[in-house]
Image 1 (cartoon, rainbow, N blue to C red):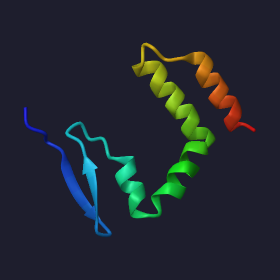
Image 2 (image 1 turned 45 degrees about the vertical axis):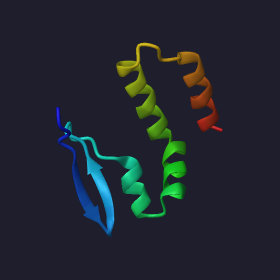
Image 3 (image 1 turned 90 degrees about the horizontal axis):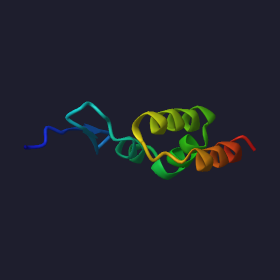
Length: 76
């Protein structure tokens, strides 16, 4: 089956949109000083909560203990 991914150009950078409408966060953040914004986004309390919920729903092997450790580090 052929990929239906779309690519849009923003500020001269290519942003991938998958066939199921997911947008590449990595591509988006590369447009604007990506390394800083990615690390900042990953430290955000709401991001950590979102990722935990996503994993609980979609990952049958989700490690709740490890997530609790990560979540507690985020709160310090």
